[in-house]
Length: 103
Image (cartoon, rainbow, N blue to C red; front, side, top):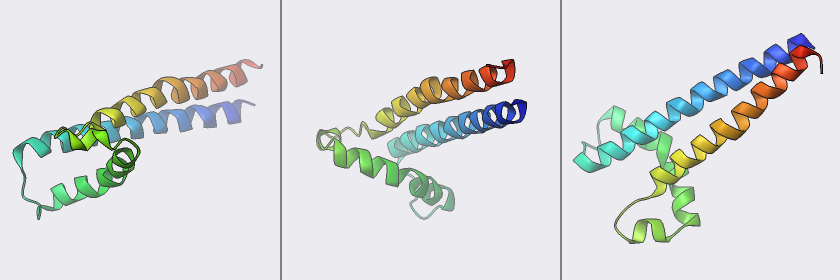
């Protein structure tokens, strides 16, 4: 059982790091929207490619978020990331701990 527990712990840790990295990408993208960056910059294009699909889905589900002139989709994405880190990551780590403890 310890192998499964270690595997779940590793998955939870990697997922936690990935969610934190994506949260920082969302924050950087939101900050860049205030300064009007060069759209042909490869870094800016990469940030747009990483965040636009998620932002588009949220804008479609909540059409009022963009119509007021303020885009709330980065804030909603950050809240979703926090929820996943609190609920999913904690649940996986707790499950891994219980499996390692033997029950």
